[in-house]
Image (tube, rainbow, N blue to C red):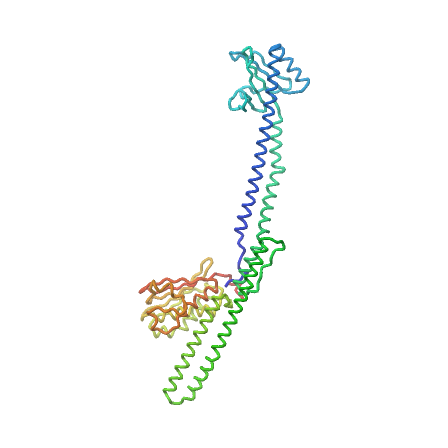
Length: 466
């Protein structure tokens, strides 16, 4: 199993959640800002429209009483009293201008724009370039147009836009940063939980616990519940280990005595061939039972997550050569060819003894069911994240019906029952590879041979100690 030091925190969920919180905050602030701006602008526009309508009514009365003179006097009065910027235009029925005037402080009114339907504000009021205008039909048939200029709306709009730079933008930035920090702090207990899980998976140390956050809440309850599960799991693992040790001791002791007795009997049997043969069979069966027991204990230990791995740097060519040397004589007897294909640059971290045993089991299986003139090839390959150790043969192959069952304990296909074996070799291979946090793949078909690939995580060689 990989060391917890080699497990880097995965920040993707925290980042997505932080971006989601920050995005919602930004959308909320932007909605409030632009919505409030729109409402304020509409309120000011309605106020300007109301003032223009009031002024147009005053102008109508002034025109009715004194016509052009009345309008002129009205403009002069505005200049001296309120200082409003007002422009007036009276058109005859044929659209000819019969009066045109404005307060002295008023800029030129854009009458063309104020007549445009696109500037319509509703209620017969038009607005453009800071001007708000309305047209009033007079009793004498003329049309009176009154336009009021005010920089208030423009000033408020500019001030409100400046507010975005001075207040809203910093608020957005502070909110997003605060949201990101809040999410990362809130998820810290989850990251601690994941780190403890990686530590247990990498070291087999079930005594590790999650430190609960000080504040009470769901995350504290989660940490306490997780620690309770770990406590129960630790007791189960320790109980399993004790049971395995007890079973191993209870079985190994009589087997050792039986083996010692058989060896003594063989030494003292002299020339009695029948006795020697019986004792030899007894000794062989004792060794077979003890090997079966050792393998079953190893498989159970690995499946319980209690297998201890002594990691070291491994060169694929070297471990393949060790396995090939072990089975060189067997291959010669079978008339088969055992070939190693691994370059010197293929290095990885793992338990040399256990991986050599796994490879030896695969080679042993291949040679058992290999015909004369056939071959077994051991090859290795490095990918970006994995090292691939492959044992390939061109032997009998495995049927599609038996392929899913080959990893089961004590399973033996019909064609393999005549060959010696316990039916535990592939179970042990799978257990050892999974203890390294890897997986085993097989590709086989009758008459085409089999290819077993051990896919192991490619850990940094420099960090493989212990």
